[in-house]
Image 1 (cartoon, rainbow, N blue to C red):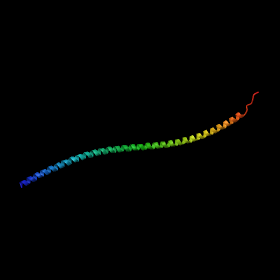
Image 2: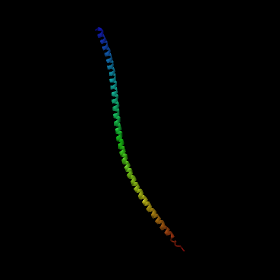
Image 3: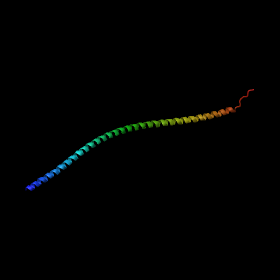
Image 4: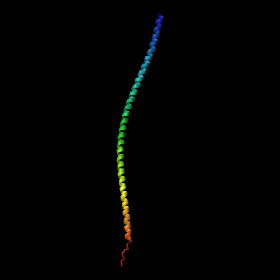
Length: 119
């Protein structure tokens, strides 16, 4: 019975050693996972900050885009006004050309009149 008890005691110690090694390995894994978790939390915080910065930039770009759309609408209005003015000036130019042609005709008619001869 002593041998059996000694064997059981040795086997028990061996099992305890195996269990202790497994426990130590698990403790290392837990520590490693805690470190990884902390790193992931840091990265998550950094990504949240980056996300916030990108949202701010997006809002700024939307504002700028709105301002550019307003400016574009204003320029389109101005362009339309200039086209109207240009059409009006073309009409006036055409009227002046007609008047000029009429004056040339009148001038031509006047030059057809013989000038009085001085004696």
